Image (cartoon, rainbow, N blue to C red; front, side):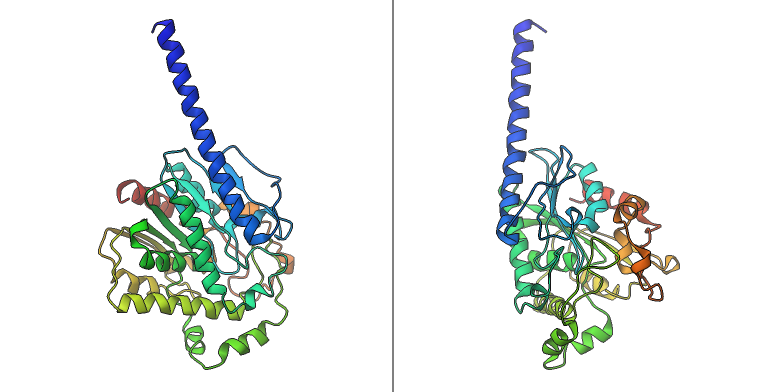
Length: 341
């Protein structure tokens, strides 16, 4: 290679690198602006890496509850990966890493009312579910400034919100990834949710909602009122599907057979409405895997810093455990995003 060609090649490489860095910077600043508006105040996170950008705030319980972006490169496809009810983006960290390693930029939003030191007012807000939907709309709108379509995924409530968004904006989505997806709730919760005035009673039962507990990345209990808001969201999804809407993008589902929080029947029923490739990774009953543990690998558990001394050890699923099928599940996920999307 001649000297001139070498100089030209280096110049082009430098320009490309600078353009990618500018794209990452612009994306991160727009992401930060969303949470400056949502949280009122933001600050620099203590822990950061070149590809990971998080938005921290003094109103959050800790930096571990912060929304984050794993930025791959300027041309990479984007996944918006949403956490569950009462927890935080921390819980989708392990899944996010798998998707990042598969070439995706991953955006992990923080739903309104979550990750906070004080969440009592939010968890009693009559517009809570609508705020969740509006926030996901805003995050996806940001992602769509950098790509034609996004893949939507989520854990538990995050999965329900992903399906809900798709049914309202099918042209914006090229795939769905559901982990313990909340497409059905415990039968007792579903029955109670039909009782007139139950939301007012739920607020009384929640009282002064407490956010501090043994898990620094998750509230100690699900607010009863917020659970009913989730049930409204699920019913909205069922209504749209019953009215004839179909899912025409590839769907990845992973669920425990013994999940008592979001029974597997919910995602089984959802598959009846899917007219595209799908992968259904079932964690067999022999593993007795709890709802929240499906997204937990060993590294996530170590970083969780769960305080067993503050937990009620008599409760089933009170102490988080590693999903023994996490790595084969992750291999199935990687295969799905490589060949189905």
